[in-house]
Image (cartoon, rainbow, N blue to C red; front, side, top):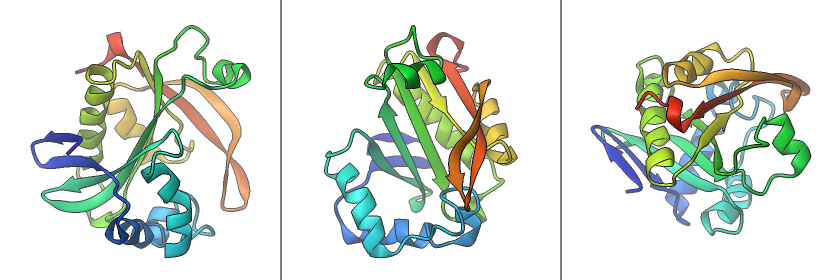
Length: 190
């Protein structure tokens, strides 16, 4: 286990068909896709393997993880260093004076676990891991402006809105605005 606290465990994805099948289950669910990737962007098993195997094998600088709650796989989390961003991206993300910055993305794929505070717990222990184990100075996340539930979760964990990112991400055929949200090590609630 990469991270373990109470009923939550987070482990790195493995190059095993079961892990790819879980991702396929979640990334073909319209409720999940409404917030992550888009309902017009469903993933077949082949596409999941093509997309996530390079991450799992370490060929891409993203760490893909599966989230367990009460021993059941319920979601996905990825984290990645932003150290090597181009200068224009560093300015867009307000990272000009901070080197050890990580980005994070996550979703709960088992929708019956939504609205129970589990996402807040998952993100809180992930923040702690990134600050304490990986010595991050700042963590950023960029939810769609209309993903109110996610934004509320991130704010509960100490993230603050830094900047509106207009037309930041293609979602369901149009470019959607996102919030750049950040939490700094010395401002962490943990």
